[in-house]
Image (cartoon, rainbow, N blue to C red; front, side, top):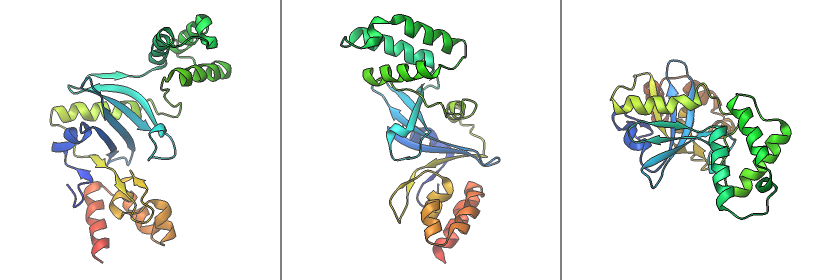
Length: 229
């Protein structure tokens, strides 16, 4: 743990991820790749997993729902077919009067496209998004990287259950900028205490750049030396 407990010890990583509404950044110290997640507890003892895919990490709407995780590590990824199933159920139980109520064939065609791996057409996307908004169905963002963001947290979660998270994997808890109070999720920003924009304003963007390239343990030591100077 660091002095602020932002760099989380592997032994308590699972506890922190299951705390209730955690903002967690997972970083590969070897490659520098990182992904920020919001893990929210549900009443059924499972956890909704969202990945940061927008531009404002303080707004829940900028985190895309990508799946549901069970305490024991069972992972149920969200997909277009999941959204259609949820939409059908809400249409059946909800108020009538929306165009989609009378056109089940439209949902059938969307489902066929998604199951075959084809993207929806622009017209389908527009109409499908409208139906999802009306019935309160959360949609995943197209920008989410299915090869990394969808797999990293489930992998780390299951390794944490076995007590075998590799040393190269860093688990970070969010911080806050001491200048503008915005949420910080990038490890370099968390330890320096400033996001890149505020660091640039203060003339210390070079220090921020150096920190962004360091491994977690080195980053903490370097940030501590800056604070003591």
